Image (cartoon, rainbow, N blue to C red; front, side, top):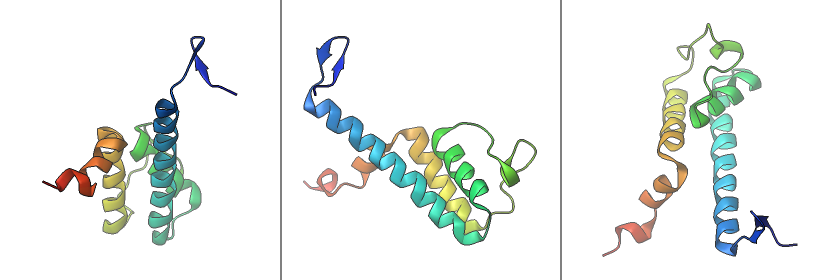
Length: 106
């Protein structure tokens, strides 16, 4: 089956790029949840904190709900959440390019 957009087949590079973006996004999201879970907070708080920081969706649920804040998180968790914020705001591919060895060779 060929994927189409506006009745035109999509190039394999476009499909690969979109798939890569989704994969890296999910890895960042679940990696963030896993790392901030070390604080001992509940899963819903951890998931919505990571999702909120990565995707700019606004307040999370539970501890970080509309009337809550991130003050109860450890410094390590705040660092992870800050990295997720940078990845979400700057987009994921520029961050990956920054850490790619090919970028720094010359």
